[in-house]
Image (tube, rainbow, N blue to C red; front, side):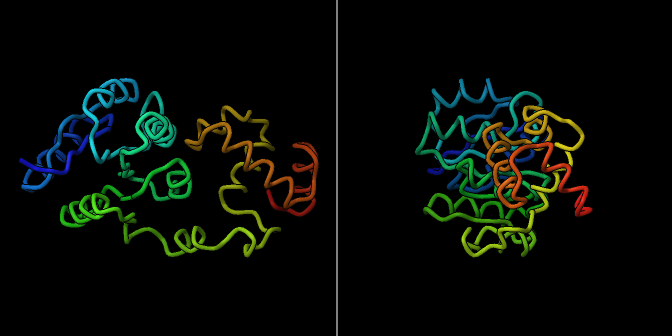
Amino acid sequence: MGNIRIFLIDDHQVVREGLRRMLELETDIQVIGEANNAREALTQLDLLNPEIILVDIKMPDVNGIELTRQIKAKHPTSSIIMLTLYDEYLAEAIEAGAVGYLLKDVKREELVKAIRAVHQGLSPLNLSLSRTQLAELAIPPNNKNQNRLTERELSILRMIAEGITTKEIANQLFLSQASVKRSVRVIFDKMEVRNRSEAVSEAHKKNII
């Protein structure tokens, strides 16, 4: 039987079934379990201890980014590949501990190749991800334009202007509250302001939002 032990986490049964059928065509891959939510996943992972876990991002209880953090905290040797419809969460996924990031339109051959790469210790990224996103990750922080807000930071700033709380921002952007707080601090530093009201006022003056 296959020597690469895989676990699937996705809230859509059709997706899980499709992935299982696809992967079990390979003689070196074995799907040992699946779950449709975070609680079920964490319970099974304690028992099964898979080598590689495929995780969706948008799920109804705990999103895939936060679930990745929880899994890595309990199972640090497991390798997590995000498999999602959305390309905008790459940085957050890597920060949370994912070693791979693939879009769901990936071809079977590419998915299998990525799984084998992770099994060998590599970190695959989907080729359809934008070059801009990959370049942003590759630039050291001290080489970036410190005064320019990223698209994610602009989104957070707009939400701040609308009076949305940190918790609500985290839920909407599929981030942890700690990540949102870090982003807010970066926004304040870049805009040279001390609090939310000053940030919103400065943003309106500069027509940023």
